[in-house]
Length: 461
Image 1 (cartoon, rainbow, N blue to C red):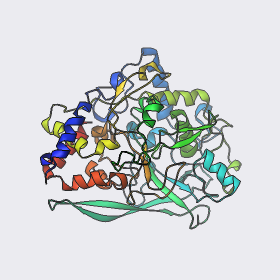
Image 2: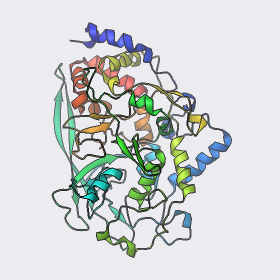
Image 3: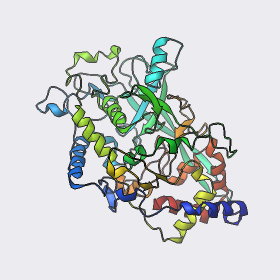
Image 4: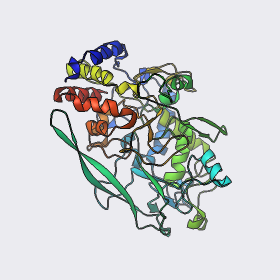
């Protein structure tokens, strides 16, 4: 039966219609830039002097780091093991990454997180408290498939896909791709049968400062871990270690909300992705078995506080692009379907930011379409790798703002979900399970016309 003819769902759509998204999802920070650079613009309400700060951060985000020693000591210390030599290489034009396109392709914009199951030792308890996982004793917390001259990369990511057909109630079908990830050419011996892995493509960078500025109370108000309202959704915040404050706080960033702030997220990326230390991350991902101390480095804090602050300012102030096609009847119908199908149960449409250190980010009405909470997404999307309080089937709800620009920014067909398995937004929806299974089943029962309208709405964001 068509959902538009289902009275209960239609009533729900009208009841929620007041949450309709305005043209400026990032409030006054919203940019009107379109095309390939739609994700790369500064917040529209930044002052001139702050735009200069944005440009400085942009320089350190885009330009490559080199191995030490080098004449440019502000950018040396790369490695010895790393995934990439520049932030921009993963976050392509400040957008999302993608898995390797073919056998032998470099996995530069996709990472594979590593860990092992925890035991009862004090060392493992300490790891879980501060890292959220127990790193592999030889390969650490992340597979690094590149190395400076003389060092040995940890291995190569290999992905194969198997087809999985999904059938709609009207008889039409979609073929999904189930990824199978393995590590080839391990550089430091076989990692063993206890290895836990999780593939992650780089997420888009837009609007991150606005997400950081959402009051904690607003996020916690959305928690319902015991499903007390009986809607089948049991979202909860991740509680993670804040290295600067030396205490557990709620997580907001990363595919499992494993980082509490953009500054710590950036410090972790410098350490894990490029092998660069900072005052917040005094060690990189090298282990004793890899003897990284034999290679030259750039000093204890290879990323100075000034550089870390500059990159953090840049990542906080990348603007969300304006919505498009708001007057299109299909977009309007698709928005009502989005609400009626139950998608907004996790993809919360709007928030108002609180007071942030940056006035440009403060007190903005924003429409990110996320609750930043963890949800059980079912077996099909499970990585079976816990992270702090995130279970092996749980993922943070990703923001949807800017979704319609993803392909333009990438310069190729965009990839979706945490591991890039989905080639279209519809494929991403069809992988949903667990707490989102009921909404997915409603999509399967929708008419072809309604599915087109739903996608028209998502692509208007």
